[in-house]
Length: 246
Ligand code: ADP
Image (cartoon, rainbow, N blue to C red):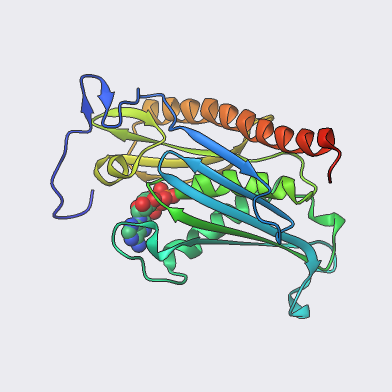
């Protein structure tokens, strides 16, 4: 909670302010291939978070001295639109977006098979259109589907969600008000098929058993998100093939 902010009751009669149970995700909507110019793209909603991911590449890396002779270089740019928050956000990169871009790129490190495309760049752009906490996780989910849509060789997709603590309870997928007034927030990303965690951050405090419960909750949720990501891709491509279009 920010300094000077009033404490508010986040749990009433065993339910959260938006009516969710403790272990419930916000509604998720996924659309694949929404941007024509991008090699791969995905629009992803997670409750009030609305995120667009676009992937370009593998393409020639400029400037050349940034090229890696052995593998592709993955670049990841997370950006929040000025209109994505209640107060206008100053446009352009800041410390927070630079950090989120870095950890998100690293979340894909174990899965993208970069050795196939030496000297190239793979650009991942994540634009947050509307934010309500958990935008880095929504961005990773969107980027994962966009990378698959672009045909970038990956060992598997990455799925991501946050768990946190509000009113002394460990809960899944914090909303904005829960994030602001809660006690802890822990976003994770993982390869669901192998249960490999590729990102884990923590803000606030968990007791050991809360951490363990939260981690299990987040991992189970990542399995659900992975299925939604897979289904969205299968639907998109079975349609194209079935209709004999592309
Ligand atoms: P995440 O969105 O991944 O949870 P944070 O925990 O840093 O990342 O941010 C939580 C939420 O706080 C964001 O989703 C957004 O709604 C809000 N927020 C973050 N940065 C700003 C900002 N500069 N101005 C207004 N709101 C912001």
